[in-house]
Image (cartoon, rainbow over all chains, first blue to last red; front, side, top):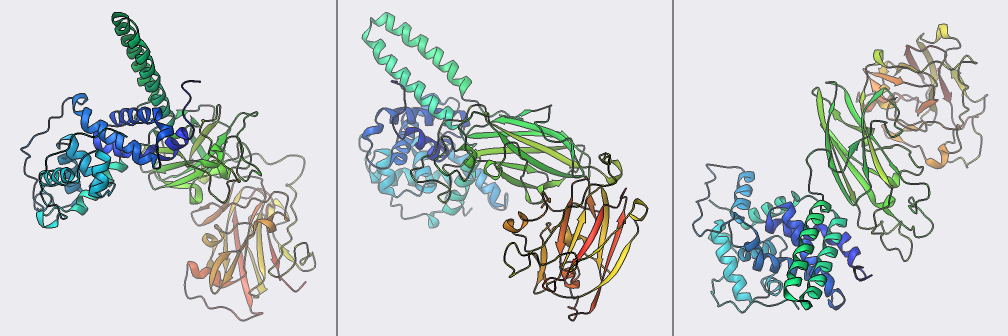
Amino acid sequence: MRNTPPAGFVDFVVARGSALHRTAFLLTRQQQSAEDLVQIALAKAWRSWGRIDGNHEAYVRQIIVNEFASTWRRRWRGEVPTADLPDLPSHEDHGDSVSTHQLLIAALATLPPRQRAVVVLRFFHDYTEAATAEAMGTSVGTVKSQTFKALAALRISAELRPDLSPTLTVAEPEGTLR
Amino acid sequence: MKTTLDDLRVALHEQAHLSPYPDVDSLVAGARRRVGLARRRRLAALAASTAAVLVVGGLAATTTSTHRAALQPAVPGLGNFSVNAAGAGFPEFIQGMRRVTVLDAPMLARMKGSISVPTTPGEQLSVQMTCTWPQDSALTPATAPKAPKNDWLNRMQVTITGPGGKGIGRCSDQSVKGEPIGVAPGEAIGVATGETTTVSANASLAAAMPAGIAPPGYRPSVASPKGAKVHVAIYETVPWQEYPFPSRPTGANTPVWHTVRLLPDGIPDGTAVSGALACQIQGPTSAASANKPLSVGWPFDPISRLVLEVRGPGRLRVLIDGTNVSAVIADCPYLGCATRNGKVINVGAPEVSASLAPSPSDRSTPLRDGYLTYWSYEQVGATMPLDPQMATQIDAGVPAPKLGTSVTLTIIPQDFTGPDWRVIYEPVGKA
C-alpha cells in the first residue's frame, strides 16, 4: 500500500510519541495544537524516513521546532508577542515556588516562537547551544542572542544566568531540514 | 525577584507533565492522512489549475473533518471509558463489599477517564480490574514461550486513583481470562468522605515488554487488539449487619474441611511431617458452640505453627497471651506468617501453597472493627506462629517466652451460623 508507514515508523511513534508531544505541548501550550504539530512533523519525517541517518527523535523534534518557529505564529491566532512585559511580582507578593513557576510559564507564552523554541530546547531538553543551533538550523550566535533576550523577558536574574555573552550576531539564513 | 534557571527548568517540566498522553494511533493516522493529502495535492497540481484547486479544496475539507473526529480530543469525564451496567462479570457483593460501578474501555495505547460515583461517607473504596479479549484473539498472556502475535496484554496497565491513594493493575497479572486483579495494596484506594466520590482511571501501554519476559527477536506489537477491553470495578465496603450473606449450603451440615499439611523449613517437598497425631485441632463441633470463646494453652516453640481456618461467614478475634493480634493475622495469608527476630514475616511460597488444600484463598482477611471477617463459604485461613512476639508489631515490648512455656491462645467468635472455624496447632518437627 502506498500509505503504509515505513519500516520502524510506528514503533518509533509508540516509543517516542509522548516525548515529542511534550515538546510540542510546551511550544503550543494546547493539546490539540500539540497533536497537530506532532502529526505534521511525523508526516514530513515519513517521507524521508529511510534517509534519516541516526537519531530519528532528534530529527522529528527538529521538524517540530522549525515548523513551530517558522509557521506557527500564522496559525495561532490570539497570541501577540509583546516587547513590554509586565513586571513579575516579587517574592513578597507571591512567595511560593508554585506561583513563580506559573508566572514563568505565563511569561514563556508571551515570547516570540523562536525564543520560546530556544528556551524549550536549552532548558527543558538541556540541549547545548550548538545542538540547539543545529536543531533550529541557525548559528550558535543566534541561539545565544535569542536565549539572552528570552531570559531577559522572563526576568531570570542576571547573576544566575549562564554564560550568555550577548553577541548579537546577524542570523544566518534559515536552514532547511536535511 | 531572583527567578533562577532552576525555577525555569522545574516550571517547564511541571508544564510538560500536564500534557496528556497522546493517542499513538491518532498520531500515526494523522501523519498518514497528511502524507496522503500531500501526495494527492502533488497529483492535483498536474491537472488543470481550476480543477486542481477544487480537488485540493475538497480533499482538505474532507480530511480536516475526519481528522478532527479521529483525534479524540481530551473529553472531561469518562473519556475512553463507559459505564458497563451489566457489571462485566464482577460480582455484586464480594468480601464485604458492594459493587458501585463498572467501567469499560477498549484497549487503546492511552485511555483516560474519571467518574463521580455515589458513595457512603466513611466506607472504604476498593478497585478490581480485568482484561478481556476475544476467544480467537492472537493476544497472548505473559510468560508466553514464544513471541506473541500481539503483546498488549503484557504491556497494558491501568492506574486507578481514588480519594486516598492509587494503585496499578497490569493485564499481565491475569493468567486466566476474566480473573479479577486487585489494583492496589489491599485493593484499597481510600475512604469515601462524601455522598459522591471521583475515581479516575489512566491506562497506558508500556513501550515494550520487559527484557526478562520478552522472547528473542521480540518486537512490540503496534496495532491495538480488536475486541480487547479493560474493565474496572469500583467497590465500597458494606457494614457487617447490612451485608447480604449467602445462604448456607444445603444437603450437608457444613462444607467439607480441606486438609492442610504444612511443609516446614528444611523439610523436603512432599514429606508429610504433620499427620493427625502431630496436630492438635480445636474448634466448635456444632452450631450451638460456634460462637463460644475458646481459650487453650499450648507449649511455646518458635518454629511451631498455628493454622486458623474458616469455612463460613462470621467474625472473630484472636488473642495470644491476652494481646489482640487480629490486625497482624489479617495480613497473613494461608501459608503463612512466622516471627523472625521479633518481626512477623510472610513465609508463604507459591510452590508450597500449590501442594495444599484444593483452593485455599491466599488473600488477606478483611479486618473490621478489630475483627477478622469472613464473608462466604469458601475455606480461607491464616498461618501464624504461636508466639506472643507477633504482637510486637502492634504492642512493642512483649518478651519472648522460653521454649516449652505455655502460651494462651484465645479466639472470640461472633455471628457464625455453624461450626465453621477451627485452629490447628502444629508442633513442627516433632511429628
